Length: 40
Image (cartoon, rainbow, N blue to C red; front, top):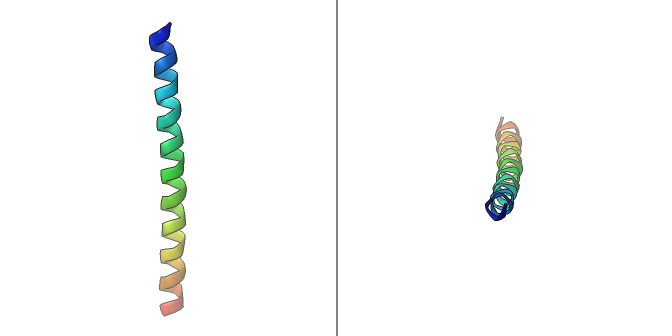
């Protein structure tokens, strides 16, 4: 049971990290798109 608790905590952190990464990636892509649009 202890292993399960540790696992869920680890996966929770991992999913949170992935979510944050996705958010930053999408923001970065949007900024890149807006910059390229301005240049045109």
